[in-house]
Length: 60
Image 1 (tube, one colour):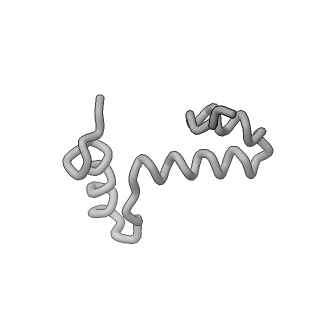
Image 2 (image 1 turned 60 degrees about the vertical axis):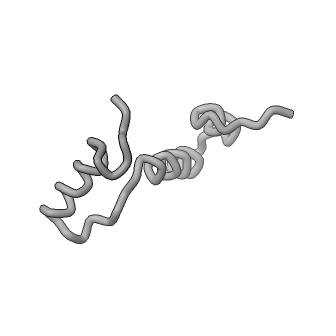
Image 3 (image 1 turned 45 degrees about the vertical axis):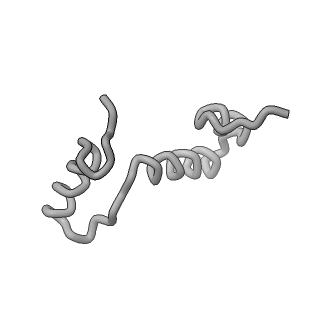
């Protein structure tokens, strides 16, 4: 299932959560991608492995 911007399921879930608790910040799937990478690296994951996980490994 694709997320279609401000009308997608993820944005809708964030809006519903914010209606319940206004202190919840605006959040995007891209934000989660960065958070996952940061948490993995801070917990000791190999940076190259995290790059592969994210699909951001650059070719030499």
